[in-house]
Image 1 (spheres, helix red, strand yellow):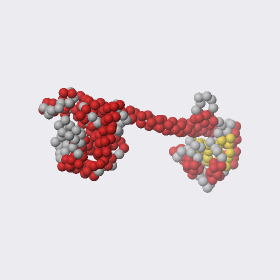
Image 2: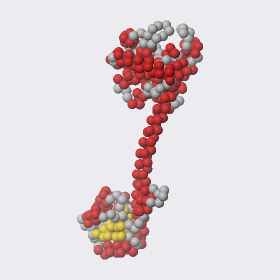
Image 3: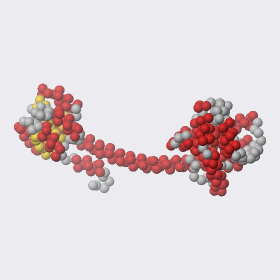
Length: 379
């Protein structure tokens, strides 16, 4: 092998040699005539008198081409062609026919023969036709070898691409967490909220059988649900008292702002609907679209329960955190109004200790976040 030469190129060069030809004809004179001409032209040639004998030889030896008579006893040329195409697909095949059988010769080509030869033979034309057929087969083999080589390369590149995509996905998740953490730290009263509500959503969604990419989209949408609040002025976002009508409208705009921000990122686009609809209510009284029931994406219906659970069990300036049992009672009362009854049923089917455990995890995360900045993404 020359430096820089591929295995495909080596195989192609190895194949470019005078071929070994099998002549099949029940007339001994024709066999002798053809094999003699082929030997003179640099080919190896062997002859047999019928199709069955030809198949035996093909099974025992390697031939590059078959030149077969059409009309033979026991097995016709067309029948031999079918067997050769089935069992020896890289062997070139030339059909020899009389002038009156030209139509059948064309039929043979339609069934896979490389050419047909007219009797009585013009020997130079036979050699020329044979060379064309062999070159065609060599090219086909070279193309197939190259295809196999490319498939191997594609498999290797696919593995590499999958690893790269995984690294990109982790980078995106790190970015998502950094954005959510930045928002949480902006408002100390809700610090850790994004992390906790995301974990609540993840637990409920998994309980409902959501997995794979759909679960990732719910987790990311939940983590970024309030990302639009980055555009809300501090005077409104951090106002301790009740917002007036104008301030409320500005605050509510965060869902559209967040949606417009997230939907532009192809990787996050499936999560954008949760950002847009996380303030919708099951009875249609939410915003910004007033969606009702199952018009609200599943992830947002799950989020509604998770968000309320975290809000009620977190301290606020105007009240202390409620207990988890008290939050469960309130969520149960709002089933069919604020919340999807099916999701409430799933929520209530999970042990209350589970939610408290998730809450404690969130508190540890919050302390870590405050001390050292964003950790690895929850998603």
